[in-house]
Image (tube, rainbow, N blue to C red):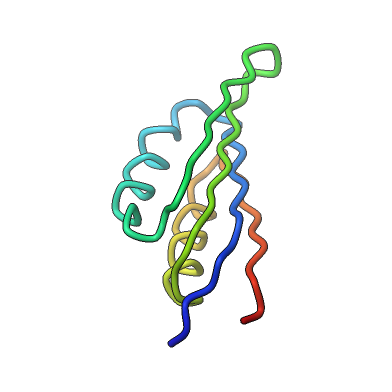
Length: 81
């Protein structure tokens, strides 16, 4: 399967969910090219942006697992080829 480049945006609304998010990101470290995390203390949220390089299945597996965590919102944009 062909690899694709993409961006993934993660908004953590419940800070108690952060360890679960980090565990999943650690398990998918092989497809993460870059990561930027910003704690937005005034709004009591954290925002993480990722650049990923992996197969559609790998990226979908990661975003699917992240999306199942309560208090976490995930969106992605992936290249078509």
